[in-house]
Amino acid sequence: MTKKKINILDNEFVPEHTTLTEEESNEVLQKFNVTHDKLPLILDTDPVVKIIGAKSGDVIKIVRTDSPAGKSVFYRYVIGEDIKQGLEEDLVDEIIEEEPGDE
Image (cartoon, rainbow, N blue to C red; front, side, top):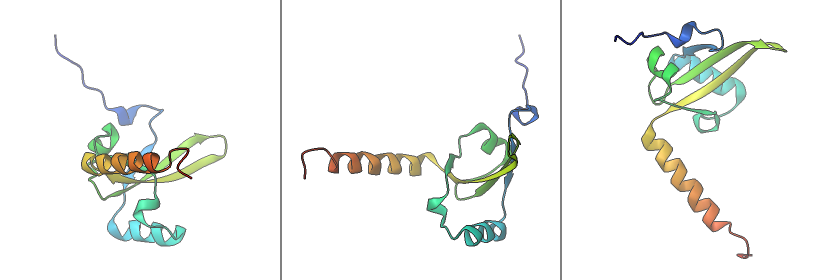
């Protein structure tokens, strides 16, 4: 039996994803006065990220048109599993440092 491949980008519930150029990324960061680390994250293992060919360090623009408010634009910073692991370790360290009773 042959497995049928589907393109998830053709699904009406998957919003439009676009990889920004370095210049476009810089414009977005400047417009919102943020740095890459302040953007919401998306893993480079995300199926859509893989399909559009985005790599760790890229900024992705996501356009949703199904919102009651109309068109909504979001930006995500692509990270790899290695960065995710480091972030998880930092979070654990923060939680341990903030345990109750340490006041």
